[in-house]
Image 1 (cartoon, one colour):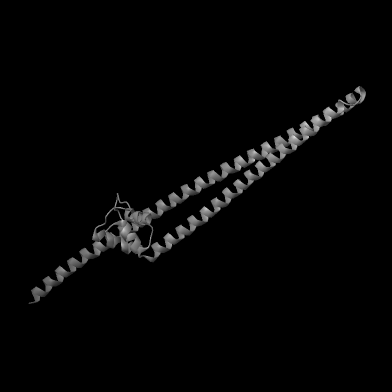
Image 2 (cartoon, rainbow, N blue to C red):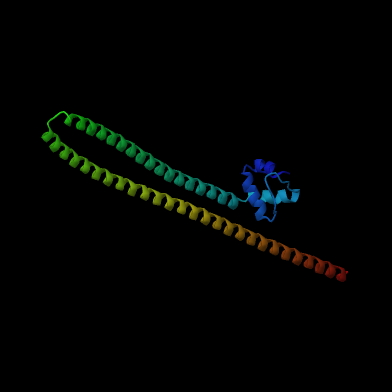
Length: 211
């Protein structure tokens, strides 16, 4: 039986069934691999285990929560970037308007007397200088905000990487623990079987001797 066919019957993901095969010691299996009847029975018994199904459900819920958290973080970053772009475009528009007004002001001053033109020019220069200083201050604030967003993005990415690493470690520990438990169970069954064989043999011997 193919693994993908068995997965449809058991109503589980194919990759989850491949992981079950690895846990049971069936190495080199993929979704398109075939299973022997004995392997299929072992896989079914494993998947029908309530503890296993509960564990899979918890893993799915945890992954869903982590995906939602990551999506929310990405949405927050995207909104912050869009807000920053809007602020930048508004700032460019405002600067362009200021430049247009300054140009019109210069043309108007050419039509007035030289004294008034000089006075107004100085005032305009002062105003422009103040405006430039204000723009520089705003640009600095925008740059600071951009750096903070980048640091926040790096922190989120680091957090995501650490979470994924922790999940992989936990899954590996769970897999090793299950393998260990299965090995212990198998040894106990073998010991019980050997003990039963010895008991049956001695019981048969005593019956023959009594005859």
